Image (cartoon, rainbow, N blue to C red; front, side, top):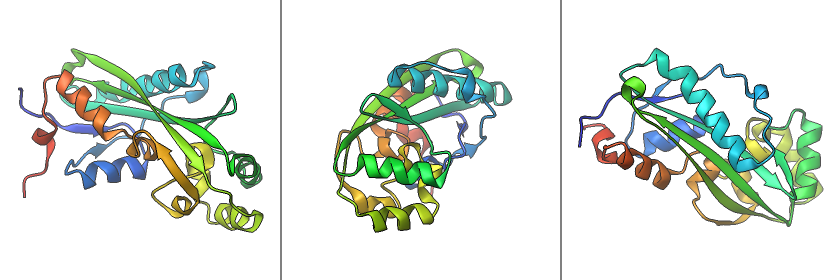
Length: 200
């Protein structure tokens, strides 16, 4: 095993940052300015992997000696790919369609090793069972603003957690970062996840 380099998170997501902090990893946050609109892939797994790669590659040159993690998530529901809703009205409409149904949350993960000697890109998918939510609950939820910042217009680590009945697969993946997948990717690059734990 090699010494752990600086861990750089190429994402502005507070959920991803908090997952890492809760797990003992203090990331340096450097949001990517990557233009997501240039990626037009139709398959959700290929899309999130391409987006995570683009974000990580945009940030990696700024931290040549760092380990850079890029991520991106989308919800696939009945053959349609959803990112963040563009308007509150769109969020309400989406929830009216999703309640009582099942969607799939895809998250792409890209790790770029120091000096870019190796790049890994993976995808994790989790099935999300949405509860039957009333019109009033949907309107109240969207009014909080929380769904506007999330792929699929929901989160499980906030108010939206009340409306998710069940998850099949990795639960942290739904927050935007599969911790078990990250551990496997770190090991593939020659690190132990414990090497990144903050010393008390």
